[in-house]
Image (tube, rainbow, N blue to C red; front, top):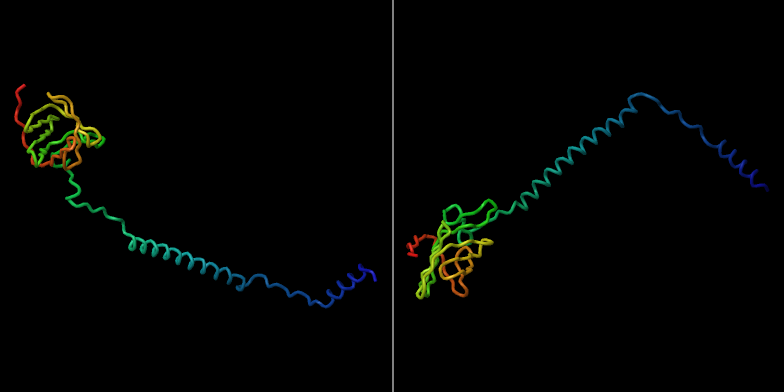
Length: 177
């Protein structure tokens, strides 16, 4: 038996037993119906997507509202507006206007807006000018030499001695030089 002959007979049998294809209807209302249904479903999907996005945005804003920064007056004192300090254009502290006292000894630092300081202690007094670096280091230049003290916003530290600052400023006494 020849393979080519068998294949030809099989092809002829298949062609003879197959029904003729049905003619395709061209035109008419039935061909526009799937397009109309697809367009309507597309619009519905678009509207549902927009509603879903708006709902999700509102949900996450309600669940995670923007965090409000709450500061109590005990932990933060905006002294720049009260006339107790001054800042340059970059926001650096440049002068202070306050009196700081050591409760144990009664020693006192008075810093003024004009960048002058006065120290009155039990054993010595000093006065001169000061400059502030990094909003916390105060360099004092006075008759007794130069000294650096630390300011944390509420108190001064001169080596191991702390001076609590009172924001009711005393005017320093004029010193005779």
